[in-house]
Image (cartoon, rainbow, N blue to C red; front, side):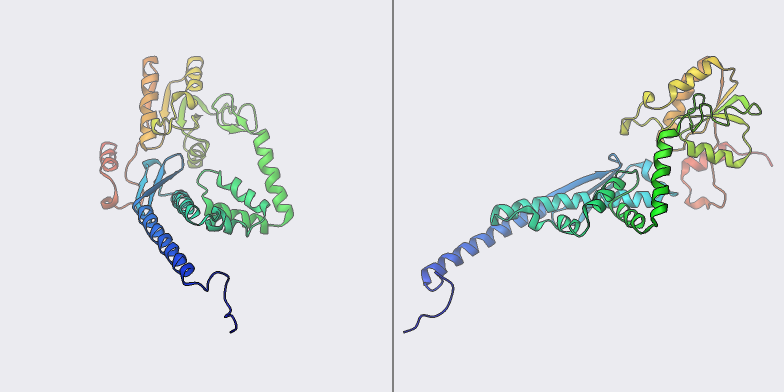
Length: 318
């Protein structure tokens, strides 16, 4: 009688029963581990902890925490990227935990199970490196970094060379103005070296972009001092981490009549303004704060109570 075909060892009922028992045992273990995984929570942050996302083992978002400083109506894309980055990091943690569980049961390597690794194999090492470097920029998440990387790859070669040359040139030649600390390619910036400006009035701003915003109005003829940040205990930024010492040194040697504090109306901006005010007032120099209130074109019903109160306090006679 001819033997029936089949796999070695599969023809005996005893072996089949053993295999079935092993398969059932493995299935129970997988179900138990899957249930335990689904009950766990995985948390990841982005933007130095400004955005925190928690995901369950079922890969469902259960919690999102946002610090006030990242909620900027003028820069929604940055917030979106930070949320995406934190979510992807939390998902990666879920994948790693799931991979570890599967590896224990099957003995397969984690690389087989990690979708992120598989996806990254579609790109060359040079593109991966470019995406990684771009993702280190503030406000740039993985998705935006990937989009920028492929945009750069599709640019003409001469434009890419101009871009890299501009970045290198700016990094090598731009420095802090020795007077106001703004970014410039000169020892003293054009504003500080202008004798027609009123050097007795100094406006304190958080960054060079704020300086440019006030210059665009064409109504301020004083000079500036750029802090390059704001005091934020939550982010570990103290008075020594911004250009406050340089401001006090400047006030000590220059004849200044008024300091206008033009930091943002955020928690960090208000904290910085109060701190500067307490430092300067004992010197006898006038300290003022820019007004804040209802924006042009804004609807009152959508404006918060603090802004409305300040608008009322800062009202002007018509």
